[in-house]
Length: 541
Ligand SMILES: [Zn+2]
Image (cartoon, rainbow, N blue to C red; front, side, top):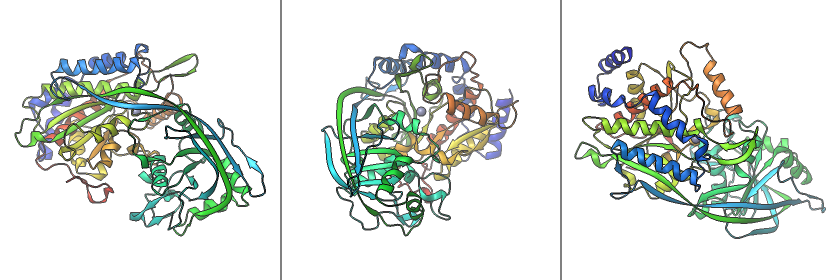
């Protein structure tokens, strides 16, 4: 009862400018988002039967069939032609066997340990061998005109191996970048791509102990089999890439007669210029390759307005996880209950809700369950490469990656609202649900760039990630932060991220209702959502 009346008050106060308050129709549709429905989807998708849903495995196929079946049950239109809910996403899996060594001018040599000190891979299908290539230190390896920053200056790095610092200079250089908030320039993908565009043969990132992610996290993701799109852009990475722990980088640099602390200091200045060392690098990478067949699952609710129906709001959640891997406490199934069976469960409830909505949304709403997010947003990038609908007709992306499993909150966290007019949608949604709207609480983690909304952002689509609140009702202040930190430490990307009978899904319902209202606002607002000036992303229109 309370929820209904506060929603009504929210609508009256806000004046219903964007068309977000759809009134009774929305209330009836929202009945689809219930703890029982969420629990049923979550229980199945995160069960051991699905073996952790790694792309290209039978478990993943079963998950995709289940999602398509739920779309069909809800009455969604198949997204592909007239009959199919599946968009094929061809992938390649490579296992790299790498040998890396450094040689000083005097002849001294050093090979970092391939488990504890380094990890090296190649996107090439063919074997990569290079002998005695020059090593060049390029600072952060960032070229960002908007921050008046260029680490490369005009120095030619063609055919060289680059040594780069992780992160961006923001935390160390007052007034540049966004302080401790990570920008896109802090991402490894950006650095490797920039190195490739400059013709570098190899790029090695330095893992500093200060980074918010540990060496095990890097090694866990980058060692062993790596999955990429079958048709990866040639300039997405140099012929070989890798990471070194800082101790290994210090060793290499000192063999070159340089001091790592001094290099670090010089990299924190806009005047920095690449330093060509007299160290030589030899690298050899051989790949074992296999093809994987994966798929995105797509269904839609057609728009009601004859004009606006040609535009699309896309609601996304990745359904893949890490599959079966190294056992932890004798459990080898990485179930990914929170990450992201929970988001997929919510996507299914949202699809059901939109299918029940009368009258329907003005714009069409596409429901997209994405594969292969974990290896690098591959499902969303494949969708952007072949978007099924014209890219310029995509009005907004609303992504869900992780759903509240711990009870009701007073707030709701939406990431990315500072960059587009979807901030109004988020404000309406929060007000209608009686929730306090919050932004990113740990911007240094760069979460905005780490899930599928980022593939849409890069393609020019105004996008948000609808997270969940952390201010739990009836709990001590700070309890939510503690729970999440505990999850990151003991559950994230581990077999223990699994279904528990004591999940409290009332907060998930809040999150789902807010996501529904946000997406509905985006679908019904007469003026299309748009980027705001300082987003750094180009609008498609
Ligand atoms: Zn995820």
